[in-house]
Length: 357
Image (cartoon, rainbow, N blue to C red; front, side, top):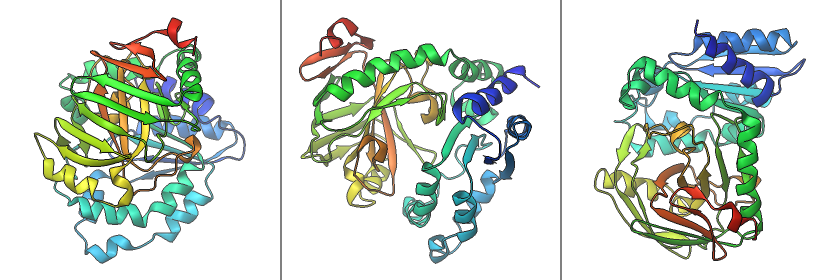
């Protein structure tokens, strides 16, 4: 077994979830990841915790969506009870087919997401952690060999997180003090208020890897336009060259060069899907390539991401939606300013200026 798997498991138990005696630990995986799951299981058990591994193969999930639509509205009470009685939830992404859900109608996804909302909210109240193992499917999507992709994954995860957190603390400080954010770049001139909101450090706890600082824009504040040079990935499908225009916090115009109809569908999921739920700034400069994988891509140093839909309550956000769809943009070239002062230019933080805020 790759020794880096053990290091990843140790990070999850010791750092990400701080597992202790008598914790009920749920370890969820799909197609790959059993070695990591077993390591987490053993480390948790040695601490006197109560681990449980559950497996949901990707093809099972795909077939589920072929069942009658009315069934998708069923609420799985037993899953809710398991979630409610769990202290720690570790989800391991290890799909063998990243396109398995590509042909599922977004409306069906939305119905199921709405039905599971109470379970998702319960999960978010726990010490939860999402991580990933390298798989051939992810390596192919990233256009890498398997060994190259393994190095990519572990170089993003196995970092000095104390040092990384110090960098994220600086971003949090200026966001918490700030009122108005201005994003400028290619086909981009967008402002939004973050006044009264709380920025959260994306340490390698909930997401492994970590490497972002994020907040929730004030719901009716976004004004202007933005172009996302990286494709938005949703349900295994790419929406390319997304352009959005906001007025009073809501998307009033949009376009995409590929899968524009899917973009339209997502924007019309519910009342909250046209508004921003998150502004995130990537700080993980160990991630140097866009790999069509949001767990890594949104952390990339020199990028920002905006999410349409549900806002994080811990940020003070109130926007409600069945979706939370992250879209990523490079800020090189570009400029991020807060209350008129630059904090990042062309992907490089300007801490001398930011410290004066």
